[in-house]
Image 1 (cartoon, one colour):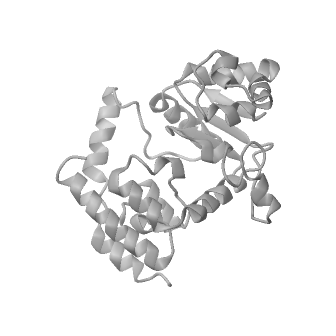
Image 2 (tube, rainbow, N blue to C red):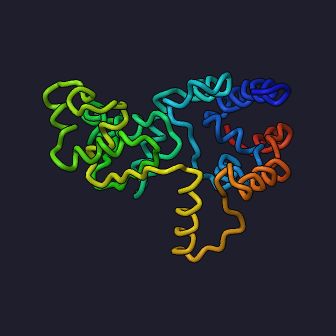
Length: 251
C-alpha cells in the first residue's frame, strides 16, 4: 500500500494484465515468471503448477485484484480452479475469507451450484468423498459443523428454506453451509501462524523431506527473524526477467 512500492505494484499489475491477455494465460503465471522462485507464484510458474486467486478474493486487492480478474474471463478462471479442486485428494482452506467457490462453486455438483452446468454438458467436479480442512479462528464454524454432525441441522434448514442463523442460533457465514455438510470436512480452530508450521513439519517428516526453511508465528522472536530474512533475501518482481521469459512463450 505504501509509496513507492504500492504505486509500483499497481502500475506493474497493468503491464502483467496486458501480457496475460496477449498470451491467453492467467495473470499469476505471467507475474510468476518475474517473481523470486521461492515465492508461491514464482515456484508455480517454473514448475508449471497453477497458482490461482479464487474469484471471491479478487475484490480488495486494489488495481492488482482488478487486473487479475480482467486477465482471463471469470468462467475460465472458475473452470481452472474447478479442475484443480477436482484433481485434489485433500483441500485446505486457510486464510481465505470467502470460500464459496470451493463448496458452493459454479462447477461443483455435490454441495455447489454446478448441477445445471453438468446437465448442459459442461465439465464439472464433485467434492463427495474428498477431505476438506478449514483452518479458522471463528468458533461458530465448529459449532455449525458439530450441529450438522449431531442432527443434520444445516441441511434441515436448507430443506425448509429457513435462515440458518435463526435456525442454528449462531452467526452463520455463507461458506459454513457447504463445509458443514461435507462428510469428510475437518475444522481446525487455530491461528494459521501457529498451525501451519506444525502441519508442514509433520507432512515433511512423513514424506522424508528435509526442510531448509520453516515459518514461525510472526509475533515470536523467531517469527520476526523470519520476516527480516524474507525482506533481505526474497527478491521483488523483476520486470526485465518477466519480459524476457515471456519471449519463450507461444501465442
